[in-house]
Image 1 (cartoon, rainbow, N blue to C red):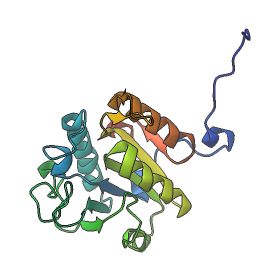
Image 2: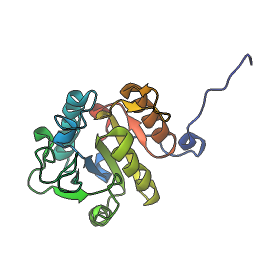
Image 3: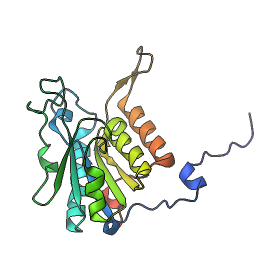
Image 4: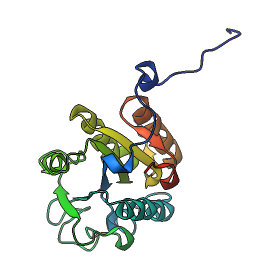
Amino acid sequence: MDAFVERPRRLLDIAGAPRHPSPLAASALVVIDAQLEYLTGALPLKGIDAAVCEARRVLDRCREHGVPVFHVVHHGRAGAAAFDPQGPYAGFIPPLAPIAGETTIVKSLPNAFAKTMLHEALQATGRKELVIVGFATHMCVSATARVALDLGYRTTIVAAATATRDLPSASGDRVTPAEVVFEGTLAALADRFAVVVPDAAALER
């Protein structure tokens, strides 16, 4: 074994990209799928209660500083097993519900930009930095952050304001714990797609 093993580096660091979180004065907040499906519906997430509290802290801070807020919600097919738009679990988790003046965008795919007007709505603000919170870490948060890079946005993800769940392993014969899914997803995103900060307190004005 080598006596010295070089610590791995992020692609963002190799490229010399800025590592500070998105300044609120230049950012828009995107709250992804803060819906009851993840709280009391078919897809409960590990640590969802704490994540909702942290997302609310982010939301409050952004509102205090006049940050444009966009709420993205997922709607499946009518009668679907999850995210039925006519069912009881498609609604907002109350502490994260929009208030007057905030925009709600409905999506049908994991990527919040797919077949929606989110990109156009963000462009109208003139802001090119995003702060993302919401659910689930490995699915819609990840998909949206990855596409945001393609569209020219610089993204910050607040780790404690997201949550995920146990998943079957790729082979289907084991369970991948939510904690492993969470850490692996955020590590992959932090490599190239986003600055990942621990909590709301890490956001800059």
